[in-house]
Image (cartoon, rainbow, N blue to C red; front, side):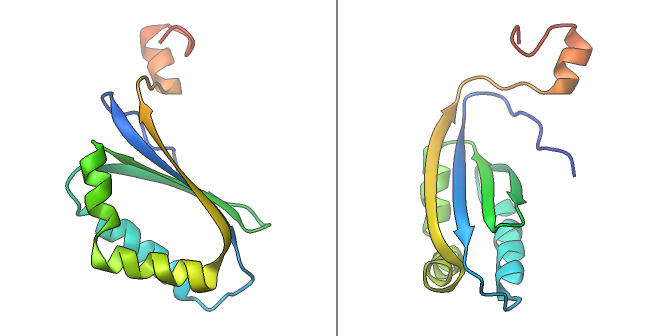
Amino acid sequence: MLPTPPFPTPYIAVIFVNQRTPVEDGAYGQTADAMVELAKQQPGYLGVDSVRGADGLGITVSYWADEQSIIAWKNVGAHRAAQIAGMKRWYEAYTTHIAKVERAYALSDAAVTGKSPAEA
């Protein structure tokens, strides 16, 4: 799977870094997939990238048009229920970072423009 391409700036990135518990009940994956599908339906949603290591460390970055979109997503009932389940069952620890993206570029941008990522 390729990384999500950059979006017109500025936009907001929500970076969710988490450590899974050893609980493997199948519900985690189903819930995570359902949350991605639900997020895609929300106003201001731009995209998502997510990875998980064999040690259970995961990083999910979701991209949003603005902070109001993030607040609205945080308050969606099904998303809130998934957050509560995560706190109770699926995560040993997590940190959420929210950042404004001022500049973004991709490898394909350099190939097209002839500029290095540092020059973009």
